Amino acid sequence: MKVGILGGTFDPIHIGHLIVAEEARYQLGLEKVIFLPAGKPYFKKDRIVSSKSDRLKQIKLGIKDNPRFEVSEIELNREGSTYSIDSITRLKKELGDEVELYFLIGLDALGDIHKWKHPAELIEMCQVVGLTRPGYHDFDWSKVESKIPGSSQKIRIIEVSQIGVSSTDIRMMMKSGMSVRYLVPDAVVKYIEEHKLYKSGDL
Image 1 (cartoon, helix red, strand yellow):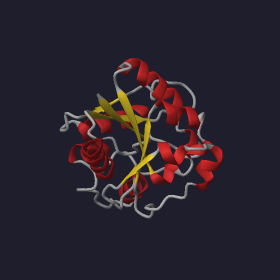
Image 2 (cartoon, rainbow, N blue to C red; image 1 turned 120 degrees about the horizontal axis):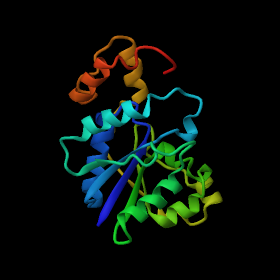
Image 3 (cartoon, one colour; image 1 turned 90 degrees about the vertical axis):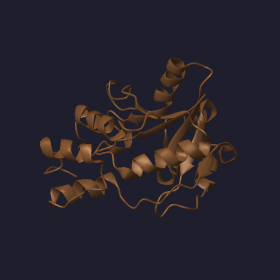
Image 4 (tube, rainbow, N blue to C red; image 1 turned 90 degrees about the horizontal axis):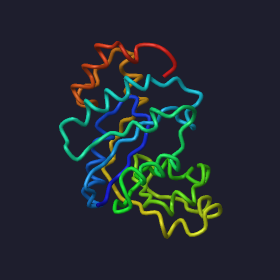
């Protein structure tokens, strides 16, 4: 069985996350996609992130209508900074050896994979799949190859819809009082409004 893993802060989850997850699931023939919200993202240590509970609840609301989508809490339950290699190692143990893991990441993040914890091991442990993003269609392999020789032959890149929206955009729009309807699932918008999220603070 092939299972996709889509990591991120999801602060908040929006249609871009959902659309690329579904397109990747279809293109790669995945049985399901597991959303993997980061507990304390290593590369976002300097930004205030919404509570683990709020982000988890929003993800559950956002994916509830798709039986092929799930969410894992393993990074949310871990103390300290979270690293992809640790999460993939644990997921492989939990899901069993018969499961093939496909780690889905945007091309922008893929460009820094050589800076991650044990990136060569991660690439050997699962199929890393780069997803195109607005402004990120072509990929420069030179830096990654210099640190992880042979990575260009092991990492796969697929084209997905270019959804020009980000969680940062959503937070700024909501702080300004703008509507985010159709950019964020209705149930998630309702949760954000009820809990008065993204009204102030460091966005």
